[in-house]
Structure formats: C-alpha cells, structure tokens
Length: 288
Image 1: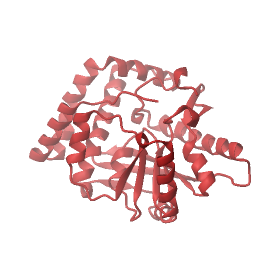
Image 2: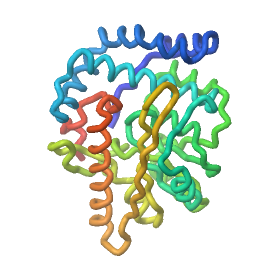
Image 3: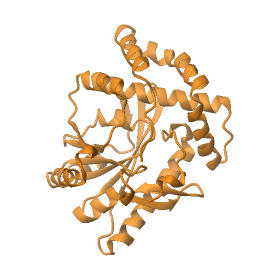
Image 4: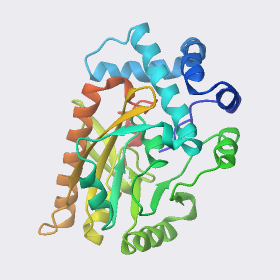
C-alpha cells in the first residue's frame, strides 16, 4: 500500500526555521494561515475525508475539514520539534509504569496513522532501543530536514526496502534482545500481510504481520494511541494484547487483530479529527 506523503519540503523548512527564531508558540498560531492554504488547495484530501466522515455518520463541514487539517499540521510540526526539544513536551498517562514494564521484556509496539504517533517515538521514556519498521514515502526535501536534526533518541529504522528476509531477521534479533519493535497496524507493506475485517460497518484492510510475529516470537503487543490534547501535550492510551498461543496461528491472529480494530474504532469515534490516513481506506484495490 503506497500513499502520497502529505506536506511539502519548503513549508516545513520555513516553519522549522521560524520556530528556531521565534519559538513554538509563534509557530503554533502561524499554522492557522498555513492550514488555510492547504484547506483551499488540497482537494484530494477533502475527498478522502468525506469518505472517512461518512463512515462515522458525520457531515464534513468546512469547519471540521479545516480543523482536521490543522491537527495534522500540528502533529507534523511536533514530529520534527520533538527531535530537538523533547523536554518541552508533556505525555500524559493514566499509568506510566505499566508500559515501561512491558517494554523491558521485548515488545511489539502497534502504532496507527493517528494523532502524534511520530512525535511519541522521539520521546520514548523506555531505556530499551525502539526499532520502527517502515518504508517512509517521505519527500526528499522533508527527509533531508529530518535527517539533519540532532536527536539523542534511542530509535532506529528497520527499512522495508531491504527486503522481507532482511527485515524478518532484524525484527527477530531486536525482539530476542528485548528491544521494542514498532509497526503500523493500519497499513500492510505487501498483499500477503493484508487481513480483511469490518471497520466502521464496511470491510477494510489491516496489517496482520505484527500479530503473526507476536505469535511466533511469543511476545506481547502494546496497542498505542497518541492523542493531541493541547499545545505540546499528548495523552497516551494503550492496550496490551497477548496472541493466544493455545490456538492455531490463523485463529489466534484473527482474534487479536479484531481486538485492535475494535480499539481503533473506539478511539477515532472519540477523536475523529486525528485520523491521518488521507486516502480511501476502504478502497478495494488494497485487498490482497
């Protein structure tokens, strides 16, 4: 599944340079007119969000559409700022210690294209190394900005472009070393990893690969949602899932994915404007 990367190199570079001169609050409010630019010109994004909001039985008004774009702009900004000033961010937990305890034993961290997932990876409170499995379709201009930033985070990328055998070996080694492996649950990297489930009353397609890995490696999955709740403030909601080793793999994986999908539905119904899949999520071309 390939989707177009949103944002542009020139706008992000401009915003980041202004941040260095004037600070975060200035940039936070500058995002209002910047968002309006994309509000006018990103018509394909609006069409995809119409489909999404229709599944939620919500009419996509101009106000809702603008606010959705602004939330995306904030989370994109925070993706970069957390790399250079992570101490200025607050992450709220109902229970901070439980996920840290789970992380110490080697964990699959299940992210989704929702909220501030990218910002949270830069400020992980765990001392364990985090390995993010991804094929970043980021524009070269944006990628060069991110690569140039100083970062002391204990995070590395397992690049899907290296091929399935290499990726599998890297994931297995990381989990055996009790490290964290972060994978997206709402997009599969290849058709063999796609699993079909009901999502907001229509079939949609998810990534069963992290659940298969958890089954084979006997590791827990921590479903992780990073919710924007204020300026430089995010709330973490998480759920542990243990894939049932007493059942056959296909059955156990299917049941575990259903838990994830149900949790994902719940979270987007409460925070609909933090959905970051800007394409037709129910498009049948994504079916295996």
